[in-house]
Image 1 (tube, chains in turn blue, orange):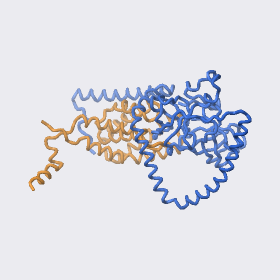
Image 2 (spheres, rainbow over the protein chains, first blue to last red; image 1 turned 120 degrees about the horizontal axis):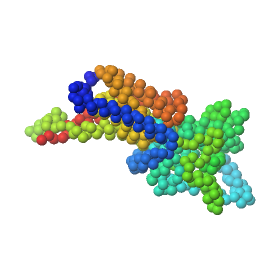
Image 3 (tube, one colour; image 1 turned 90 degrees about the vertical axis):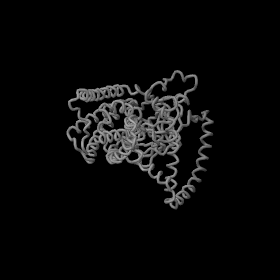
Image 4 (tube, rainbow over the protein chains, first blue to last red; image 1 turned 135 degrees about the vertical axis):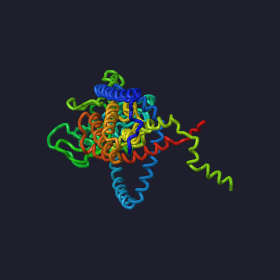
Length: 312
Length: 183
């Protein structure tokens, strides 16, 4: 393609100045960008107000789009269902037969659990959700894993609250706008979740790897007791996440831990619940004021002082 | 009979162009708007657990800049990058810096190669994407990203560029539709 002729400034002094100042402005733009970058890297919460305001503006459109996403994915799974229905049917029958037995056993365990709790005088503490929200978007091209949900300050959401779906933990609230909030997904590289193995309670913590999987690191080093297929749940240490929320399943073993797959894939999640911060809910009303205010700081729960970096 | 002939004549696209001109406002605004729409892709109904989608705002910017040199000023990286940063999830300022540098680089490349075809444009865009994505990821994570995370998005972005270029060409034709009556 021929170069456009109108870009040559020729002898026109005015055109020459326009070109020159254009270059000058471009250089200044790069410098301004560098300055902004340094400012936002040194203090990550510095521009959060601007960002949440911008997300609030686009929230109505994004909500409508999120509803259509659910319909779209439903359509695809319906089509896929025709191809796999026979095998799936057999599998499901077998699973139902197993599950019936398990259910009776679980009822017995629940009965026993209730009786023992009554003996100890413990009250059952189910986290009452702060808000139920629609997942309306995520940083799909950036390496940082953020999602936007359709509940904000007006619905009572505060910074640090854990966000979960029926399948498991999704992340925690990082920035709050009026009607939307930004969630740090557990797959983000800055996210650290204290967990334990569901079967026997071996403590560990997970950090995101930004590719949809989690790195599981054991707290006590030694022989790696993890096996493929182990499920880890939140341990509640650090006081942020409710103990017992499912997080991930071990996929591949490493010398000091494992790579785990997230149970609640954000891409397949439509509705999420925002839960109150565990430590604030668990402490009795009289002593709640004396605990360090977790909602004031951006990252209340570093698990391990040596590794617990705060979220940017 | 006569009426149908009149209708045929009126529906002729070339007849419509007589005494009509494109709107200067739309001709200027459309490139900026399409780039901003591309930057809004994180609010699209795609929730991903890993970075997969190409940086659409950046691709549309490259396509406009290469298809129609001169339609965007050299300093366009500052306002457009700022808008992109508000929605991309990157630390604020990374797109401002990288887009400004990319536009200056394109200007230099254009001085060096005034006559270009589409494959050279694609090559240049691929080179810029190959630098832009790892740098943006490095800025966001504070260290170099692993190739496993990087490779799928890089491939998607490089192969999405011709499609984005097609789309931009379509918008370019719409931009210059003559609908404003003269006189």
